[in-house]
Image (cartoon, rainbow, N blue to C red; front, side):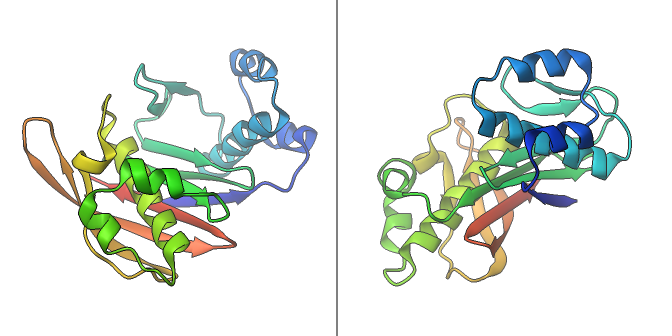
Length: 198
C-alpha cells in the first residue's frame, strides 16, 4: 500500500500526531534542521495513520527501514513537502518521491545510461528526468545493496512521461543476473512518486 502525507503541520502538531518512542525522540532532538525533523515526524504520523498503533521504526546497517513489531515490508521517502511510505505484507518494496522543481542535470550526467539519455524528451525533459531518477531511487531502495552503479545496474526501458503509469526496468546484479521489474509512478503537485515491489 502506498500512502502519502502532505506536510502542512507545525513541528509541535506533528509531534502530537506521532506516537514517537522515547529513544527516537532523543534522536529527533539531535537533528538541528527543523525541516528534517518535520520530515521524520511526518513519516511517523503516516506510520501511525496506516498501522493504527505505535510502531517501532529501526534501520538495518544498509539504511533500509524496518518495523521491530511488524513483519510488514516497508520503504520510506520524503521531501520538504511530502512524506511517503510503501508497505507490503511480505514482498520487498521501494519508494521514492521527488520535487520536480529540483535541478536534475547532475542526475542526467551521473545516473543515466547512454540509451536513457538518448530517449529523453526535449519537450518534457525535466519531467522525464524526474520520473527516471525517482524510479531508479525506488529500485535502489528495493535492492538494498551497496555501491550500486545507477547508470549500469539500473536500466529503465524507453517510455513517454504521463501523469501516471508503469515502466519496465531491469536491475543487473554484479554477477550479471538480470532482475526484471515494473515500476509504478504518479505525478502530482509538482512532485513525482515512484514505487516498486519484488
